[in-house]
Amino acid sequence: MKGLSKEAEYFEEQYLEKLAAYDKLMQEARGFAKQSREEILKLAAGEQKQIISEAQKMAEEFLSHAKSEISVQTKEAKLILKSRAQELAKSMVTKLLKKQAA
Amino acid sequence: MTKDFYFSVFNFLILSGILFFVLRKTARAFFRKRSTNTKLEIEKAKKFYDEAYRKLEEVEAKLNNVDVEGRKLLGELKQEGHLEKQRMLMQAKDLSLKIKNDTERTVKQEVLKAKEMLKKETSELVAELATEEIKKNITTEDQKSLSQEFLSEIEKMPKVS
Image (cartoon, rainbow over all chains, first blue to last red; front, top):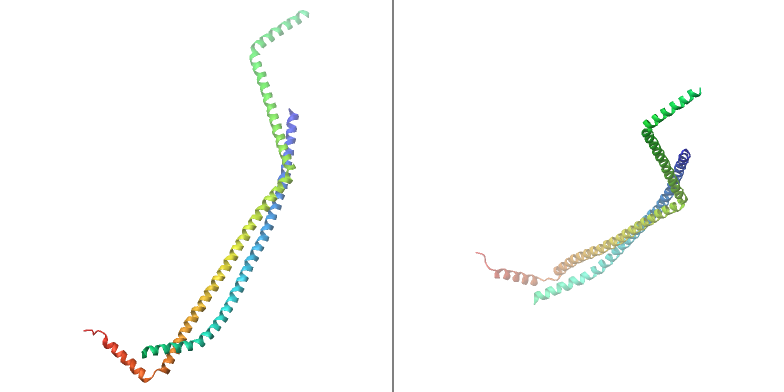
């Protein structure tokens, strides 16, 4: 019976040693896996930032271009309308006076 | 001496017989209990041995499998990371689309604003030029005729008592 107990104690010691080794290895594996996940997320954050930054840059350029285009076209339209305004005013007055005379 | 010896043997046998008779039940119970206790102790020791052996086998199996388990964990966390990455990129694309749509809406509003401004400015200019044109072209007779017409219109209006 003593032999049985002694052997059981030896098994118990071996079990505790191997369990500690197993826990250590698993902890290392977990740390490595977490690090890999963090690296993926870090890259993703960089890509995300780049996509948004590009979209903002494009939007700013588009808006700026559109505003200058609107400004140019407004100036051109103003010139055309100014030259036609005289004709329009004359035609209106003529029609008005004709109506009055009739 | 032989007589004494026989006498002693006889006494011993009688005493043993009495003792056996008196203690037989107690002794039987004692030895039965001892036997049971020994059996229990052996069972307990065997159970402890089996348990220790089972635990050792389990941990050895786990240790042999630690590479596979580590790779599985790595795969799971990488997969989780990739899914999160996809979600983040999707979010970024949605935001980019929103920025684009907002910008287009702003440009449309700017165009409408410019058109409204042109209309207003042109109407004011035409009205101003027309006024000047009228001032240039209207004659004294036209003025008289307009005044006459104005007065006759007033006269036509119903009087207030």
